Amino acid sequence: VESLRRAGQGELYEAYLRIKAELEAQGLFDTTRKRALTPFPRGLGLVTSLGAAALHDVATVLRRRAPHIPVLLIPAPVQGMGAAAALTAALQRLYALVTAQQSGASDAMRLPVLDTILLVRGGGSIDDLWAFNDPQLAHTIVQSPIPVVVGVGHETDFTIADFCADVRAPTPTAAAELVGTAEGLASAVCCRRSARPPPGWGCAPGSRCPLPAPWPMVA
Image (tube, rainbow, N blue to C red; front, side):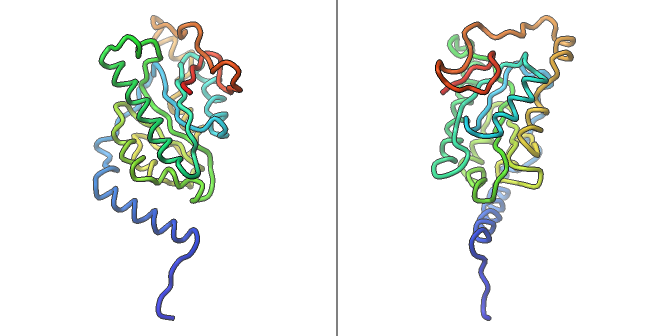
């Protein structure tokens, strides 16, 4: 035997290690640039698939712990061809909104003021999670104007997106727990702040939206 070469998922793992090494050398994983989460977020951006179990998990936690926090959902596929590009575009839409809010644009201020972004999906094989190893997505995550929490897969799953995030959560549920300040605590500390979003927010008419009623959705 003169040489050995991994096949199947082994090739994907080699590609993962190569991408990881390249991006680490570029400084994308530098811990000094990572930001702490806002303890009492005014609003959350959420990127995941409408059909993902992760969406149900996040909605369940936030409905229980923090129904006072409005959430803006930008749906995107989380696996398959085109998923990485769609996730990147979804994040960029949120960044554009945050930038507009920071500049005081009136149209942007009609939506919840975002302090944190969640990027989540459930577990799967390395092939299922591959979109989260995309270099362009990695660069987009580190360009975020506000902290990004990535919760992808199970506790033992690590993607490139995890290393780029300001905070890595072991699961989507854990990601929601990290940002979901309990309603009673938030009310005690921030009793002067309105907890209700403007009327008329909710999912698109006729859609099967799993989110709590106060949550808006951007299709």
